[in-house]
Image (cartoon, rainbow, N blue to C red; front, side, top):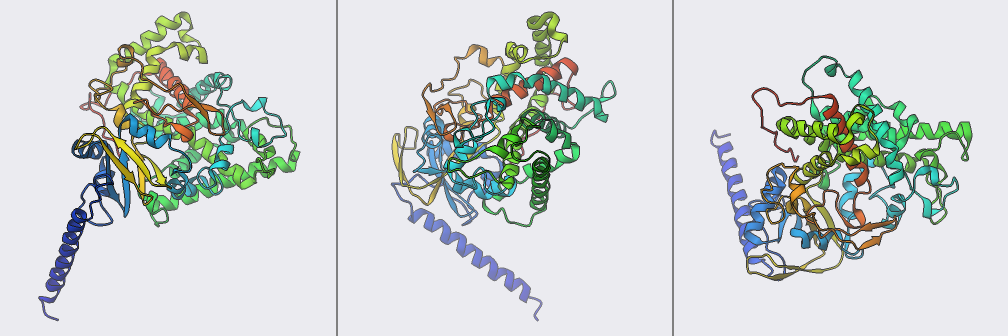
Length: 512
């Protein structure tokens, strides 16, 4: 073989790639449909804007918004994604009708390997709404349940009032047993600490002592492995044999089997009408769907996994950001300490309670401001089931109307409005006090029952860290209370500061 032959092959390949790229560029120009949103041009077909979007979604949205307005489309791994920004875009997508927009088709490939089969997005919307019923505390629910009382767990005000003392017990226990906190000062991994602490708190409050007794740092690691299944690549290719996916699958099997073993032991000891435990597992063991079918042991296990992850996922990441923000702003941390002394007085040294946490206004604003800048989810997607017409007041030619075909996926990004100077002056600045001076963000008073109780539609607000509409996070108030309690306890018991040489600096967000 000639020594030049490999170079010829490389040259041929370069020519082929060049032709493909040129052809793709020409087709993007020629196939522009004036009735559909403008398309962000991309160099490579199929891949599209995946790299730019994946590296920093908010920077990508900002660049595209400046050029195309609030509504535009881009290619993501072969799919056309249409982005609708602003409060109107959020409302259009998050409050879309069920027959028009579908979440299950988008998220089932991502969530089913994590939660398990038959729950959340791996079932019909009607079944999922039954699984989300949350209007009463467990102890108010009869043992014999119909579909109307399917999954009513402790997320009401009455239940939340009982959680703060349990949060504090778990907080004290965790730091007393952590080697890194036994000295008078030291360093700690904020991500690891918040992941473990929030999973212990959530398991104790949402799932009871029997489940909490099974948890140690090993089980916290299993939940971390599950959480790593929520990576962008798994939206499209969840079956890839990546190391994190193998850890995800192993963790899911171990955790599901742990719950199933608890259920089986209860059935052996007490039967289906057992009275030993008045908790979530007992409730689910006796629950039935509206059609009369019982909830299988596997479904119970998978619901328990989903419930615990819902009670931990957002709190873990936001808790870490709160600690980082306070370490970079010792003046705010000192204000929080002074607030407790001023508001609680002599009770500032006594255990926290629901009422005490609610009195700490600046403490709550620290949580709120951190959620504004570090929303847990940057993109909320829906599959388009029927062609839709969307209107935009902000476009390259002023007011525009576009038709969104069923081949597209709609994307809402509430974090864009939360970081917009239109709604929040100096939006890039972390300033909890801003909420004391700006008018409270407007939220719709209109309420709707999607099958699990009345909730506000609320999508016209620029501040939507927990989404809106039928898929609004049902654990929103739990997260606020858990984060508020953690913040108050950290302020009471620790002084945080950034590492030497990194004062005022924050790590960037890893969107991968």
